[in-house]
Length: 221
Image (cartoon, rainbow, N blue to C red; front, side):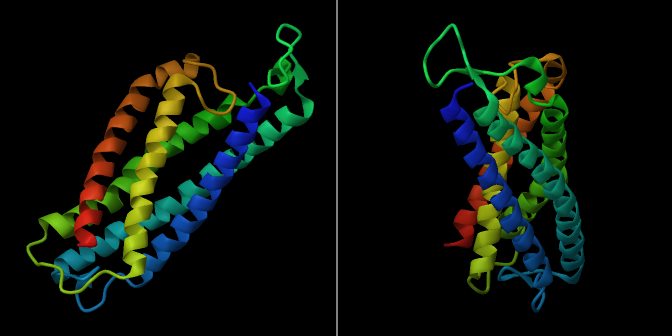
């Protein structure tokens, strides 16, 4: 692993932590002002639809909070691991390039955090991001009532975070599939067993990314 690669990964995981903080705040702010005059983001909804959306958004916010905490723990470990690589890695005697560093076995990345990120990402996909994307898509495509007002900045931010969430999950599944994450080897024993899950997660992420993108396009037009 190169020193430059470690620095890039540290910056990437810091960005992911910041994303989860913003996403968490925005989710609960959205839930806090969810219903105004039986409308959801300017779209008129019935009382039954209002209760259903409130339940689903509340569920996604609650599970999202737990998932964000768990993923933040994993990302902090990855950051610590890569800082450790930068401080303690020795230069490879085979290749004298300043970018090539190696670590002894006892300093390798703990695979349980790699597996934690994978399984929490699967739960996040189905119990948070798919729910929110599905609601956005239904409101702007399945609802029989047209939007009666333009969505505010918070609604737009909520849609943007939902879109970014699926890109983040797609990236997570792809890196797990090809062993490009923190200290991962391509298709280790545990990751090989989860290979079908990574493929399914990647496909579902792309599908709901498209749904969210369609809803966002209609939301701002």
